[in-house]
Length: 214
Image (cartoon, rainbow, N blue to C red; front, side, top):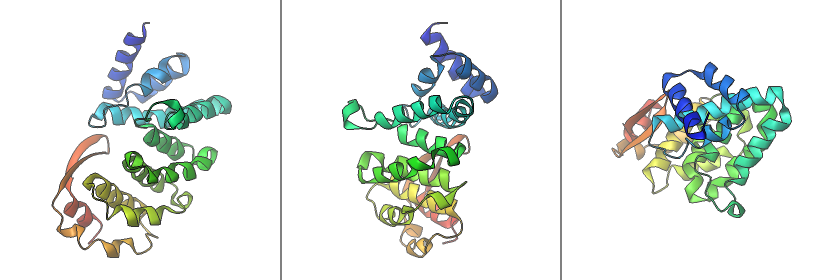
């Protein structure tokens, strides 16, 4: 199968929600993981986000089979966001988040690396996505996340403010009093588009704050 044909097949599986078939394909085909990652560049596309989620669950399966192989994928994603790589990593932070979410005990060591990327403006939405997704499963891994969320709530970028609101919601208990700082956002009707529960959705910041009971 050609690389182009492989990508098309993966696209079809993602849109059909055939995760079992996709996992089998990646486990059996040496180029399938690269093809899957290559579909994660358009953050406005459902396809991209389904691919991001798929990377997390598939790397978990790969790690069960070969811990070294799984770790190599993680290291390549980390490398892709360094200056030395010559790239910007695109959705690498989000993919790392999904990997931790699916294999928290194996990859908890990369959580500080993910959180440390918040200083770079380009990675802020990805870091907030990571806090949300990891927090839904293992909030105790997110030491230092509260400080990031406090800063993000005041960011000039509405997408970053939205990411903070979504992340706070995932932490449930133990938000460190963050909800008390949401009064202004409750009046912010700026609309943002983001991915959640398998689809792209659009909400206002006020609506997201309202979801937190503000």
